[in-house]
Image (cartoon, rainbow, N blue to C red):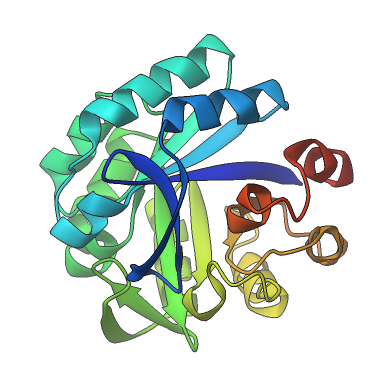
Length: 240
């Protein structure tokens, strides 16, 4: 199982939110590049970066900082996936231009599926579709806008497009360390066996990683648990 540490950017700092709420932000690092170097030094092979300012503004905001982070990661041979505020094709292309290995689109996949289908064909292996769900239904616009789109339906559609991976976040668990949505993630993976499904949200202990691995989940994003010292990235990598 691939363990992917997360760096969420807000105001130029590395933060974590609770359930995606910008009013519940905790600053963990004034220098995101320093935080990234710690993860790389611990052995991270891929890093997950989110432009939270962009997610709430509806357009990329932290592009220059993302470019710096991508350069630092690539110096160590690590891959980078980036999301947040990529609501049109131009924004996706701008993020690809930073050198990011993968870009993550969520809102765009629902609002303009033809555009994302085309991007998947034009940039094979580089477009990750985010499935941000609450009670099994997709939420958009930085998780602030509910929809009636079932997570499972979006997963199946993204697989047809040729998405590089699916990033499944259980919004109600994100940032709470209350345990990951193992069953929901496994259901998505079984529905699209040829596409990597990345679990995100709720991991708070090494036992949570054991549960994901035992269920054959193949990748997981780690956030608050690392920043608050619930376990180290080295411990997570050894467990995965």
